[in-house]
Image (cartoon, rainbow over all chains, first blue to last red; front, side, top):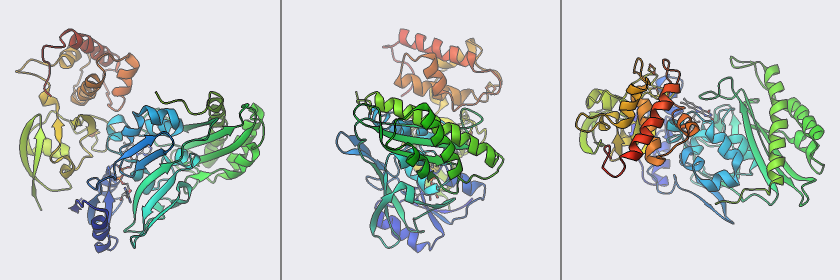
Length: 297
Length: 165
Ligand SMILES: Cc1cc2nc3c(=O)[nH]c(=O)nc-3n(C[C@H](O)[C@H](O)[C@H](O)COP(=O)(O)OP(=O)(O)OC[C@H]3O[C@@H](n4cnc5c(N)ncnc54)[C@H](O)[C@@H]3O)c2cc1C
Ligand code: FES
Ligand code: FES
C-alpha cells in the first residue's frame, strides 16, 4: 500500500491536487474507511489528499436559533460528547454512539461516513430525518448544497465527482414538539455493521395528539440509505396510536429492497425494518411529547 | 520515499524516517522501539494499539504517521514513573485483570484516558470506556474492578503528582 500524500491548507489547493490526479487521488479525512480499503486492496489510489489541515473543515457549532453546523472532517466523538447535540438531535447521537469504538470515533468523521456512501452508513438515516443539507464543492469549484437524502448515488458513490469535496452538513433547529430516534440491529452489540437500521423524526401538534410532520429513513436495506415515504404518508395527520405505528412498519417493509448477504437474508431484513420502524416512531413520539428537544444544559 | 517526521512522544521530541502510508503504530514499534502498544488486528477492531493523541484515545493502527506529526502522543511507556507502575497498571495485576497480557496496554490506555476526564467513573462508564478493547482472556469483570480500584487509589493520592502528562 504505497501512495503519495498531500497536506493542502486550502480548499482550492486540495481541489487542484485532486484534479491533477485525474481520478487517481482521493480525499483523506479520518482514514477509517479509506486506509483499510487500501490495505486490503479493495480500493486503488495513487495519492491521498489530507483535508484535516484545511481551516474550518473540522469545526462544528450548535447555537440556539442557528441549528447544528458540522464541518465535514469533524470527528464523530466531538458531537457525541456535546450536550447540545445529545439534547437537540438525539437520533444523530444514538447513531454515532454505535459506530466502531470510542478510539475509532475520535478519528472517524461524519463527512467520511457520508462520502464513503455505504448503504449502512449509520449517520445517514438520522441526518435524513433531521433535514440535513450537505454543502459541497463540485469538480469545477462551484459551491452547492442539497438534502443529504439526495447525496447518495449508489453503493459507494455519491454526487461528488473525483475532485468534489464535501464541506459541511447543516441541520436546522428542530420545530417545537419534535422528537427523533435511531435504532439499528446488529448481531453483536458493538463493533458491527448494521443489518438494518431506521431513524424517525416526528412533529406533533401542541396537544401532542396528532402528527403534523414525520420523516422515516432506513439504512442497509437498499443500494443507498432511503426515505420510507409511503410509511410517512400512513402516519401524517393522524393520531400516533400503537396500531398506526405498527402499520407504518408494515408499509416501510414493502418500501425497501434489501439483498441477501452474509449478514442476513432479504426477508430477515424486511422483518427487521417492520420492527425498527415501529420502535423508532414510538420513541420519537415519546420524545416529542416530552417537550420536543431536550433543553440544553 | 522516506521522510523525516518529528513526533512528540511521551513529552519528548523524536524523529522518525518513515513513509507517509505507515501507521503511527508501526512507527512507534519499529522506528522508536516503543513496543508496548500492540498490533492485534491492524484494522481498528481490537483496541490493543490504543494511544492518546492530543489527549484523546485513538487506534494508532489507523493513524497515518504524517497525521501524528507535531501532535502529542502518549503511549503505555509513559505511565510508570521511575520504574514504579501507575495505579492502573498495579491494580490490573493485583485484581487479576491481566492474563496473557496482549490487550493490557491498550486497555490501560483507554482506562487512563477515562480517568483523566472522569476521576470517579461508574462501572457503566468504565465498561463504555473500554468497550473498544477486546480481551479474549479475562471476561472483563476483573478489568472493571481494577479500573475502579485504581480510581479510588488515584483520588487518594491526588495532589502529589501522579503519572506523566
Ligand atoms: C472497526 C470499524 C468499525 C466501523 N463501524 C462502523 C459503524 O458501525 N457504522 C458506520 O457507519 N461505519 C462504521 N465504520 C466505517 C467508518 O469508520 C465510517 O464510515 C467513518 O465515518 C469514515 O470516516 P473517515 O473520516 O474515517 O473517512 P475516510 O476513510 O477518511 O474517508 C472515507 C471516504 O470518503 C472520502 N471523503 C472523506 N471526506 C471527504 C470529503 N470531505 N469530501 C469528499 N470526500 C471525502 C474519502 O476519499 C473516502 O473515499 C467502521 C470502520 C471500522 C474500521
Ligand atoms: S491493532 Fe489497532 S485496533 Fe487492533
Ligand atoms: S489478557 Fe489476554 S487478551 Fe486480555
